Length: 200
Image 1 (tube, rainbow, N blue to C red):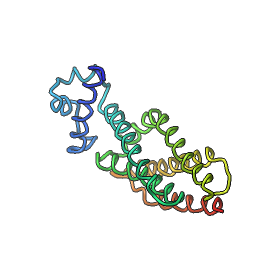
Image 2 (tube, one colour):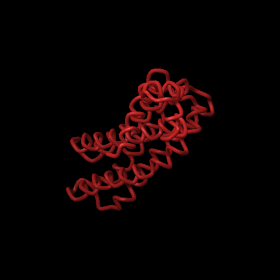
Image 3 (tube, rainbow, N blue to C red):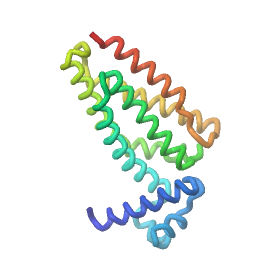
Image 4 (spheres, helix red, strand yellow):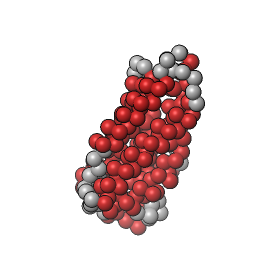
């Protein structure tokens, strides 16, 4: 790890402590600089604003969370249970990261486009993982032969669309937190429907 990466990691850790303590909206760059032991001007060398710090750290934490979730997923019995556990865990991650850091609807509206831009590589990896889970179930005779890549694509894309829909509702209603209950319920129904049609 380069010196710059080490410093960014330190900034990220300190910033997340501030976000958890004060919330993303109320945290200032001065708060973060103080927590790191820098002056505010030094932070600008690494990040343009606190939102960029939040997004970068949230993506890194998300990658670690999903890696752990994938290991836990493989321990579940049956392909439908595996896929549902994984999809629900994705919602749990977003619910925790956004609500724990008390992100207002205005801030959410600002950070989502950048977040999705950086999140693209992670989504590709997620689709590959789900495709492998489904492919194994086909090889084991649990499911009929099908296009596993396409099913994985659809599952992740619809999960993100449902998640995004709940976030947009929170923005439009100017709510302080995102309630994913309906999105999770809809996703569970979809997973059940898909696997009902694929089981032998």
